[in-house]
Length: 189
Image 1 (cartoon, rainbow, N blue to C red):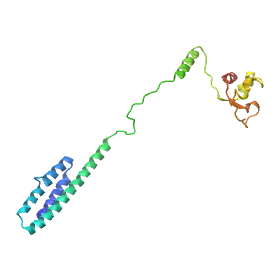
Image 2 (image 1 turned 45 degrees about the vertical axis):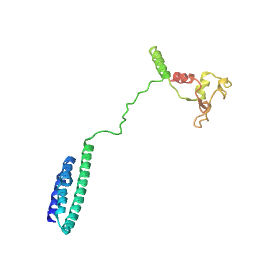
Image 3 (image 1 turned 90 degrees about the vertical axis):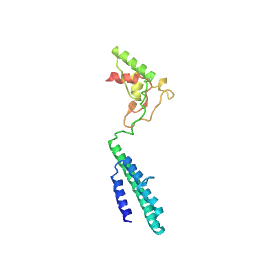
Image 4 (image 1 turned 180 degrees about the horizontal axis):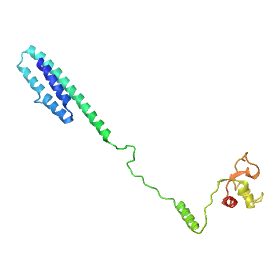
């Protein structure tokens, strides 16, 4: 029995000393393999008397199971250590897209508008922009549309609720019906 305890201590220290999976596998083969130390001891059981064989056989089986468990734990620890080392050195950003983004193309209408702005800009003209929601004065009155003009009718113009913070024609809001309202604003400035 003391030989089995000494063998267990020796094998345990060999398992703990193994720092790579290959070294641990070598320990497993030399201890538990076909020609391993525990296997060799199991083969000697046949020459023992029945009482001794029963005691030594049970002790060897317990030792074999304990050693297999120690090897399994050490293997797991080595794998975890290798993974931790790899993760510490690896700088791969898994949130990055693997496919390159395809850039789109400019819409033909936008391209034409940009070309026109460039041509007219070269001739000295400039682009003026104004609000899409306009007041009645800038949209009609400043352009001399009389109150009964057909352009002021409900079917041609989208009127919005009046703005209580303004008075008169400025309180009447509508969607801009033409670009001349922007020209009025531009000429006023």
